[in-house]
Length: 323
Ligand code: DGY
Image (cartoon, rainbow, N blue to C red):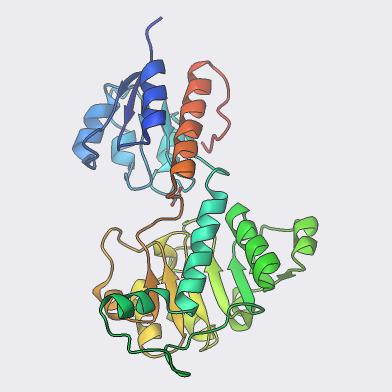
């Protein structure tokens, strides 16, 4: 039997590429250069499976390619807002993602951002590297205490719960959340968490607001100037979810005008470009979308895509089907 033809759009961890090459007629992207829309359209006519990642915009134009052979899009990433899922549905193409395996590492990065922003991590590091440090003194580079403060989670899915676990048990933080779709009393009880009735309530009560909702029509632009004004002036905003949930220009205004104290960001509105206004600010801790970037997790994500695609071509339901 001929093996299905699969296209991997970026370089993946070695062990996963090996597994995919052994089991499929695979085309890898060893140069790791992003594919253009035109290249993806050509690929749709040649391959049975497209394996993109979160930075590949798989638009309706690509998915609706005439004479397309693609039957499954196996996304490398838990977020799948890069894929036009409505178009996939219309075109009868299955879409899968990679949940669970990146939960802890992404929550770890949210913790790093919270601690880094509050304790002025990167500012301190540059201070040392630039040889500006002239010694300990009682008022030098004071930050904000994290332990015991209130963490407000927007979205209470897997990654939010992992952050709640680390923050509540490790840092004795009070957990509050806003998620109209979440009502798991066992988990609420475990963290002694307060379910806020409105976004406003969460924003006004939190010392740290951490975003854990997907990017959808409802959540894009959710954190705008109005929302930022509802936060405490001593509070921090943490974003490991998606850049477009925050209006970046409004965040820059809020940070410049001290409407909030600081922010920690792993994701941006127009990645990989970051607003120049953010780059100038000292009270924001910036990372380059590192949420899932550990060897263990990236390999597990790739293996999860592999399993989904194998199941699909065996005629079974892929475990992580989203469309
Ligand atoms: C995802 O999987 O959606 C992340 O943003 C990349 O780790």
